[in-house]
Amino acid sequence: MARTTPLTDARRGTTRIAAPAAKILPGDARLHHRALVLQNLADHGPLSRADLARLTGLTRVTMSDVVAGLLEDDLLVDLGPRPGTRMGKPATLVGINPTGAYVASLDLSGEHALRGAVVDLAGTIVVQHDLELGEDRGEDAVDRTIELARRLLADAPGTVLGLGVGTPGVVDAEGVVRNAPNLRWSRLPLRDRLADALGIAVHVANDADTAALAEDSTGRTGGAGLLFVEIGRGLGAGILLDGHLLRGPLGTAGEIGHVTVDPDGPECSCGRRGCLESFLAVPRLRAEIADLTPAGASEALAAAGRRLGLVLAPVVQALGLHDVVLSGPEDLVDGALRESTASTLVAHTRPFGEDEVHVRMSALGHDGVLTGAAALVLDGELGLA
Image 1 (cartoon, one colour):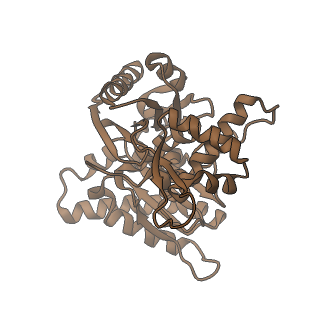
Image 2 (cartoon, helix red, strand yellow):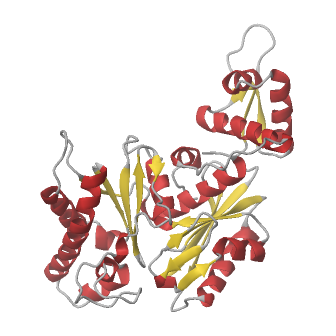
């Protein structure tokens, strides 16, 4: 069975958007208490009720009620006495039940296909399906997305908490895809369309943003922030700075794909000419190197890397970032393109301190968007951040 980075780690990188202050209702308090318990168990492993009461500040009576409810919902499992207990009544440990519920996630950023997975609460992939997109765009692409989600839900071995979706394009806080030129989506209420079709909770975010959050959870960044560049059907970036995901007032932060780098360049999916994406989107790169010798292909990919580095340099310099992460097909990205991006960044930025900009491939490989999308559901439905 394939395995991604454990979602207990992926959740730690999730940045939430604060909700407006409001009166706390009894139901809200219950959900908050449940989230506290689950988060502590995710962070620390199995604990006793007394341990949980001490860590959360809840009374033992309240903790007993919360744990009882989570056990009844099958989200926790009773693990028996704490090992090594010798005197007095042994403490009984509880832990998260990995198979008590499942999460479905979709990655809509792929070169040729939509990708989907169902994972358990330990982050193990138990179902995985891909669906070829072909030339489907607009409403046809919505239909294919719903079709893939239905396959995942039909094959899930238990209760599915919700569906997380990482999609190309500008996505607002309500799950509306405001603009995704490569899928020909404009002002598409994707979250609501999927929720209505599937009858479950749905959480939608930009693909690069979700992958950036998942990447941060691996610990490779040291919490110092990163610039995550997703190279697929389109081109986008997710920016983490000082522990926060930068979205911008319109949700457009990181939309580097439509920066014009050559006014006389090829036509872009957005209708303009010479956007960075028109040079670096995977279909464009493959077409460009298709008939070239290995040396010629390497030079073409290096040229693409130089263009990318020139666009990233002012972003990296202005924000003080030194960790740049690339994600995309390794045969295209991890080689001349990555090396040229790195050398261009070093040549066009001045480090403050001893750290130059470092360009690396994603630690999660092509599973970053799926992992991040699953974490959206765990955050939204269980409060696991």
